Image 1 (cartoon, rainbow, N blue to C red):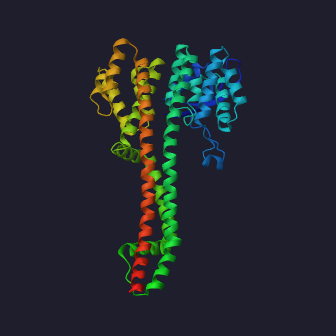
Image 2 (image 1 turned 45 degrees about the vertical axis):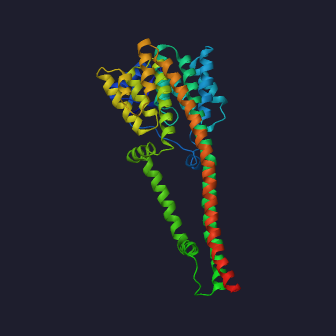
Image 3 (image 1 turned 90 degrees about the vertical axis):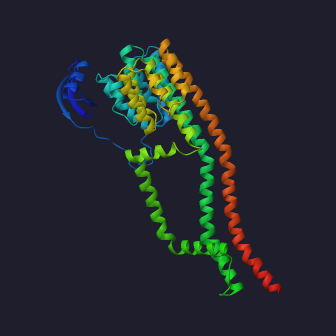
Length: 409
């Protein structure tokens, strides 16, 4: 969707400027008219994006999820209390401690002050406000229930943030152990094993026959000492290229298909995707968003390309007259309970309420699964570290024991 920059006059004759996305020039002019603006200049382009330099590289230019949750919660409270939207936004901008959020909220205040709707102001910051957020706000403004929609958004964001924190927390300990294991391995191979090899050769002589395990360790150590400095840039470059590849559409598709086949990770990925689908779709339906639009927006919010494609295909079948529950019932990606609960929601007209219960159930399942994997990963990582140390110890003690036997004889 192209972006348009405009210069226009408002109802007071004041000249204002800004930008937004629209399907075409006619749609852009229509949007300006709805905002009570008379265009002076309208051209296709994009607004200049500013950054904080090195802070942007470190992620300092991105609004944190906790700050966004607080922003949404406070905005909801102020709107519910009858505070005008512009005054509420201005107050939040003035009192936030987040530099990134202050920058974004300043732009939102400027656009709303110029006559834009809140949704049109938010859509200019896709890195902060995703499609789900914008579409729910737009639906809330249209139906006159913005305060209720903001409450739903805050609750949904809190749930999503909580799930992300639990997953990160579960991965922190094994990640630390893995880093320690790798550093310990390279430390031993680069500094300890060469010295031990020298001692063994001095004791046994240049023609001493060393056990196969010891010889293998010395070969690996010698290779790392000689070529380690050349390998390091290649490894770092390979990791960087791999991470960049994962951000491409093809890379995402391959990676997401792969993780859905990994035995221990597969159940968690599926449950997280189903929980996100249920909570996002229920929130959009509760906000009054049309089913097809809600499905397409939810597809982009699930976070897995495989599930995204399944939901987009489901939207096409729903468009052709099928019920969503009947479509998901035939899809192996969604557990039977999802289709069954969805069918009940479709029959009773309470799809959003039913799917919230589904989301709660699967979020609890994710918590249990994460706790289970965490309890398994810890002993596995300890076993790996112990095995590494044991192999090195065996490679050292074997030849020493052999030399001791030779000395006795």
